[in-house]
Amino acid sequence: MMSSAREAATEEQREHFFGALDFLKEEAVKRDVQAVVVLSNEHYTNFFLENFPQYCIGLGEKNWGPTEEWLPIDKVWVPGHAGLANHIAQYTLNHGFDPAFSHLLELDHGIMTVYYELDNGMKLPLVPIVQNCAVPPLVPVRRAYEFGKALGDAIRSYDGLERVAVAGAGGLSHWIGNPRVGDINEEFDNWFLGVLESGDLEQVLDIENDEIELAGNGNHEMRSWLAVAGAVEANQSKATKLAYEAVYPWITGMAVA
Amino acid sequence: MHRAVYDWVRVGEVNSDGAGGADPRASFDVSVYELTPEERKAFDNQDIAAFYELGLHEVLINRCARGRVLQRRLPQAARTARCPQ
Image (tube, rainbow over all chains, first blue to last red; front, side, top):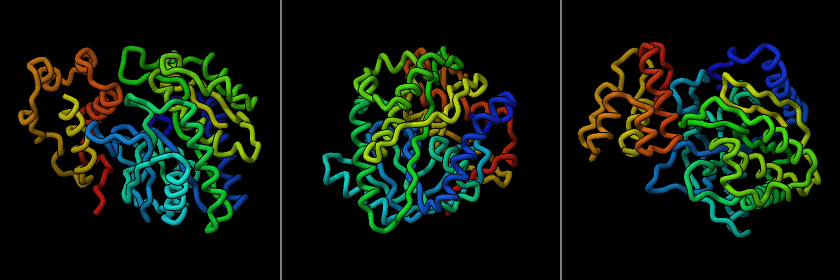
């Protein structure tokens, strides 16, 4: 909704939210980021019920997106980074995870909205990682975080690039496809962002699925946020909240951290 | 029902030509799916609430709803989706 209904948010909300994204884009340019890894939910875009991996890493030289007809982002071949992607796949396989892989992923709104805000020209090499945050059985939150730790270690051990960004894309609280669509749990969102900022992730890593759903079925996408928290843990990095807006027209608690 | 809705969503995404051609979903043949009468009625009526009551996964409900809205509001020529060559 941040792309397809941009103007539905108030001007103040747009300034805060997109201002934070602009800040990150400028930081990426300033730091000469060479590639970005984006984790996001799989929305029945690449997989259906006969085969639904918990993680799938896009290994291809290019991937295509966005899938959705309604998303006002040009549909392009997005450059991948096969070297980094294959290294991540092998590293995580060597360290207790079994991600699926794809040489051609379709990139839906989950990845494309954030990627587009990072690079409007969509030239920055992208390693997409789709996660199952929607179709039970789901990876435990702690496992998502541990995968992120392995991902971070993989990136740091890759010799081919010096500066790689990692982004976790997904809502905070939101409900989709049920009668509560439009609700936002601001209390949960602020608590979750506070946990990220505190660095005391033990408060959230054993959270159960029914508790996650107090902030909506879409809130399972918090796994992407925690994967990124895991990826940067070795740097002893805590999150800094740059923006939080409960954007009701977008039916989602929107944050940048 | 899941398969039918998934295929309906996907045929619109994958086959949209963006050149003003026929709506790729217009020729979607739902009769090849083994749907109960209630499921078929929900599909034919584009009844999102019925899909929910019948247990369709909520992500697919969301995608279906957005596809339906698009189908109602936008002429084909206004769509920009292109299938990779």
